[in-house]
Length: 500
Image 1 (cartoon, rainbow, N blue to C red):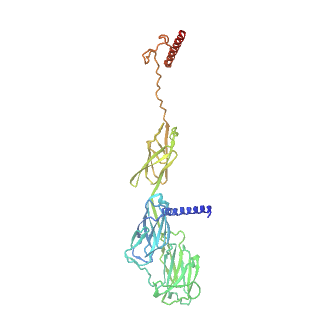
Image 2 (image 1 turned 60 degrees about the vertical axis):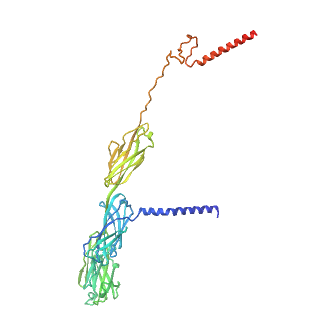
Image 3 (image 1 turned 135 degrees about the vertical axis):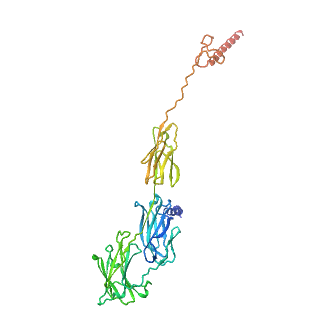
């Protein structure tokens, strides 16, 4: 293996090691930003008993989340086995129309996802409602819902849930219901076979008049039959769409909102029941409480179904708005340069949720800092620790900003809104005037001041000595004495030579 290959191999191994080490952190980040949270606080059925199967009921749930909840967090509720929900999706909105979150209802549960609202509000809570029906008989006085955090909630079913299976029809009957997809409905006609036998040998035609808000689609129809003995056991045999014996055919008239159904050569013995089914989508923009009707005419009999009411799923939420504040520091005056880089301590205090809170942060000239997550309506007080510097004098801090009250004593007050309160904090600084030390005059030397030997300083000639001005005269005197002694010695030596 060449040296280049060895280096490349080491680089690859190093990158793999880094990726492996980073993987837990990556997953931790994902988990932290979107997680299941505890929210459900109650479940109840809105409709009054008696309760029966195969009937839509409105179930209401209340919820509340902790202030630590984040956008993307979810909460769920699982339905009991005896119930099935109608599919729906809707937004949770506050009174102003702001979206708090969104929910999706399926046959077995609902899932709600929180939005950005929870990060700008505190004490967020609400309610939601959805449609469901019992799919089996319940003997107990309550059914159990299970929240995503494992908590269970008993929903009261006074007297249990009875069987709503229709009895064997003795004449044509019509009924309708909302489908589990939450977007469509079904009309069904039960016809005892003998009502399809024509006295004149012609096939019996069924004429259906539907609500003009609905749209008929021949492809969304079906037919089937069952024996009287199998009624209620869900044993059905299909009838196909066609023109031959044992089929059915359709002729539609959209202008009159009608269509005609003909069973071709049906078996008309008295031991079977035919059923014709039509599925129609709800119109776009259907609203809660809107009703839809249907009428069928069979062998001279007009059968009117009970109106079907669209009941929308939905919900709401609300919370205390959150805001914050930012403080920007400015240092001004002719002393600003002298305190360049100085840090100033800003103190804050407020009362929220009945508790007093205090804190501080530091700022330098031109810097900005503050606080977020405060409930709207919170009154905040700011102050600044006394500042000092060498050679400068600080003035009283000046606060500015919309809604900010400068108390002229180094403090300011303001009220948190649903937006950030922007505050300017100026420190005026001036150079201190210089302080010079007092001048000390020179001390004059007075004539006649005695020296160390007590000899007065006399003018030259009065004591036979040389006058000395300014510096000490002692060295000059010694030189003079030395010169005299030298001359005397030379003179003595000269005289001795002469005598010799």
